[in-house]
Image (cartoon, rainbow, N blue to C red; front, top):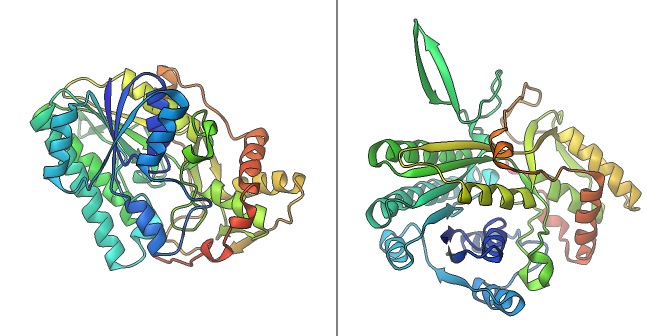
Length: 381
């Protein structure tokens, strides 16, 4: 297939491009380096530097003989995005091109405005470009489990049937996000659902939990093919962040009581889920939703796992409870359903001690590059 990946420079975008290229698909990645620039501007650079997309694509071709095409540009610019669609005519569009950080979206007004404008305008442009250029193109949009919040009922897989006063109907499961970023993801879902009903386009919305890990089969081919690995409070996901803290002797920062429970998955499973969505596309006029997680943990459970493995590796490690800077429930019911991707064939990589040892080993190689001042910024909302 011809697969267009928007946000192809990111933590998930670049590994996805290599993974699908390795499986014979024709890949074009688009990015404007927003995440790179934000990390530089607010002093939260990743653990190690990564080459630009053109250099990455050159190294990929040297190692595999396969080509990944690159275009640099802003997906908020509709004329640019439409031209990309007209020239490439994708069969599948993978939409990662959003500001991905909840804490960043709550940093200040400018960060909130950037998040709102970038995320919603890009999604709007994607829908219009598909409608005007390739109406049969399958849109795969990366959503987030954070859209659902933590309701006191089971979280269904995207949809819920409701009976009210003797009548029944099917609705999107109620959303109640805990950050502006997650709110924009709700609005993405609503936008695409509107255009599915109106224009008969095809959409798969993947409600993904926090991802951990930094290695895939493809990133292991060369250090220059590594993906972004943030460990700061803004762009670092909790497992990755805790492991870096353990390696450098910084206390694991557990917010409040630590009972916040979420669904997680290995970066390798993100790639497998994307591939399953690619080869099993939704139908015209269908918006299919999968909850993209493999297991659930509380923050306390994650901290205890990482504490134990870190101790085994000889690290001076401790756990420190800090006042929760976020408005969120610290103890709550959490029972999401996540069977759809397993039915399509997903074979999960679970968060075992062996997996944690592997991440520790990678991070330890870059111990001298860790900047402790980047870890905790104290962002509150």
